[in-house]
Image (cartoon, rainbow, N blue to C red; front, side, top):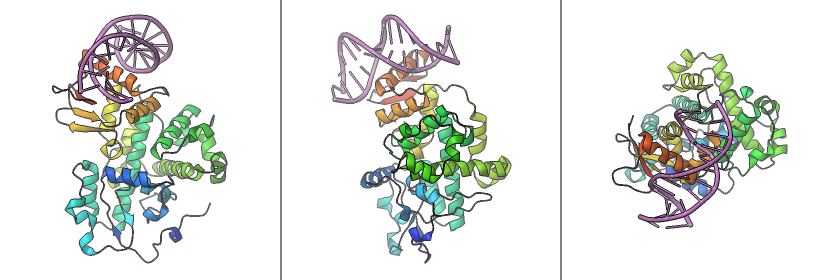
Length: 322
DNA sequence: AAGTAGGAGGGTA
DNA sequence: TACCCTCCTACTT
């Protein structure tokens, strides 16, 4: 493995950073356009993210995929064409987190941007841990946990069936494998998986070095306390799972989103996607929307979820909104 | 075709 | 026993 240096990035001449708009549709469009699903390295100029005690050496391989809304290293655009200042490029349905981030990032130094990016990594790992019910530290994973993580990563990066190539491995097995080992299991996507695992490992190692109090002051997020208080966690209920997804619009607004958060009304935008996520969470590979919706309907009697007054397809309402 | 509604039986913690 | 999961039929959009 070679260290992913600036030769991939074209960043030696201090190319200016500018912020791409965080529209999730743009992210989808970008994804759809990219035939090679490995994130293009040229999209992100950060090779080593600086944060007290944090080193995410392979983040460049994945960050553009996970955080395309954050930044894009590019040639300087005409000053009048800065996307973040161009109203028509501002999406109407930007998630709050991303919108806030965009505003914050606009005038930030590179270091501040990096800190925010690291914060987003923590959030994403936190979310995955909650939804998969796994430890943030890969060394703790059983074979089942590894399969969950693989399925999740497969889903996240649109990797076709990679989980089948890594059967019966514990997290410790996975961590002892080299990048070459990963490539041997999957010549096409081994390096992507290795990079993603590396982020998890680095983050877990960072967490060990930095007590939560230290990290909390740097990241305005509940990441570690949430992760730790959640693991090992209780069996999750479907309604809790849906709420978790809804509370992470940055990650999941493409498949489920609030229509009216105050009233608890939400819409499942991609029924198959949500069902698959639920199936991964519950270790039910055969889960589909038919079954998931049946489970939702069981909540009608219990007064947890109902159809809104004006019934619409794929739209439900929490009886007791947050 | 896909989604909605609800009955029924079964598995598991 | 609670909480789904699975399968099913009938109906609606």
